[in-house]
Length: 259
Image (cartoon, rainbow, N blue to C red):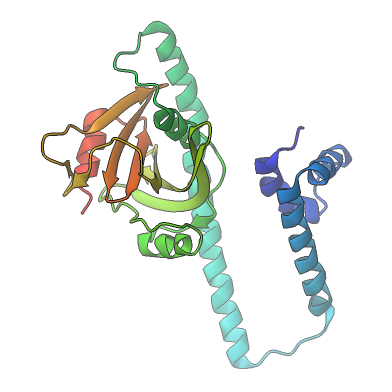
């Protein structure tokens, strides 16, 4: 297989655990050799494992309090793993949805299609199966995780009928020389996936959302692209792109449920 940066992150644990076949390890090594960012990440991980491994070999007698803290920590990690599994289940239905959407596009002409870069970017990231970096159903916890990683502050939408699954760091490419750091949030609503991109809004002409409705005199920006609906709005200096295969009316109703 051909390793890229997303594959590097996905298979890094398998690489260090020696679970990859020889050919796959060779591809992995070749990518690390030419990618500075991945090599830096690899070297940090290699250093960390080298520092921890000797300590793991030494016998250690834990006090009762330390044993209790370790047990609580392991239980917390088990919750994170269960959250990741929930995210994967949502992602598993995306390829089937995409195939159905492709068939629909072949037989039905699109109306109202707006090929704006931000719409294309939102759909592209929505169908991306990269796992979240911070799996959590708690919006406050996810916001705190992003606060030290982004240069702007945003509020994760609180949808009453959608469950937050977590978030990850990403970038949106709006023009050739306009790349902006962004938060990518993933929600589950029934068997549907809903994603939200949050990024700096400067230079974008989109309506501001107040109390679930666009500002006076403006309509909600709703676009169809590749079988998905993308809703664009702004809150202060932050733009939001909400993407799903849900019907437009249901998505608008969902946005209206946001406090």
